[in-house]
Image (cartoon, rainbow, N blue to C red):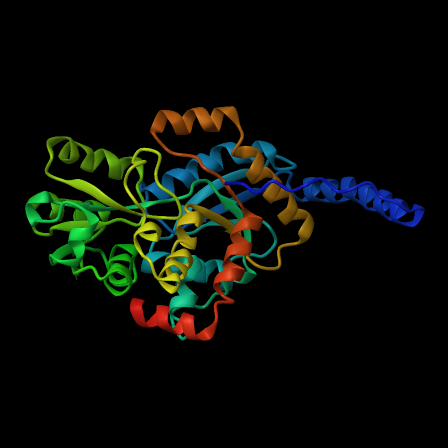
Length: 350
């Protein structure tokens, strides 16, 4: 959820009061500078997703409604740049994109922990702690979907019965989370990687090619796909992967709730930072402060816009905003993990 900050206390001395008035006087000047810059401009929003997917839908919804809250009301055009689980777009925004406030990014949530999991990864050129985070439109939770025919009907049975799980690639949540459950909970999940996406992974579940699927998120399209199977009793949700339980499944536990070891809980908390990031948007480093401040305010305002909210509701798109400051704070916590614990996590996910 968006963090609420306490208002600043009344200033007690004349000197501090004078300083405060000086800062207030400077704010209109910064706003005017941002307005002068953005008037008549066309901004580009680089999304790391392919056209039509969940990330793309959120990016286009934001691009439609955010401009009215940016000083100067510039247009925003969405450009798709899929590839390497979002790494391609993140590298572009780090190394190539203009740093003048005309380019925004819509990244995949796993991008935040990419360098943490692979500190020597040659393909990762960016430092997420130096991106300017605008915020996220949604927090995520993943589901462990299981076919009852596999012999697993609840989370406890994961420890006694081996099952297979469909996955896209080794560095995706659909593969990382099962490996974490194996290492930290004692589950016996054998991951089958190589499926083209979440829809193909679900198709494997439907056909019986795999006993289960562990999702990183649960978009409207994802839920629409498995709900008929759930209603028919051929697929069950037995575990949730996120900081909190999804409101639709209040009686299904999260991974944080089923592990007992404090280190195991801590590892899941670190892994689930990307779930809080959900659908994150950001700016490249070094964008002038007056422009980054203006874009942060515009992002927050757009998420409260009644037309955006109505359109999201019409499309079945959940909104649960997270502030850019909160994302930056969580990433700072992740990247300050004690070395021994960080190495244990990397050994699990490698």
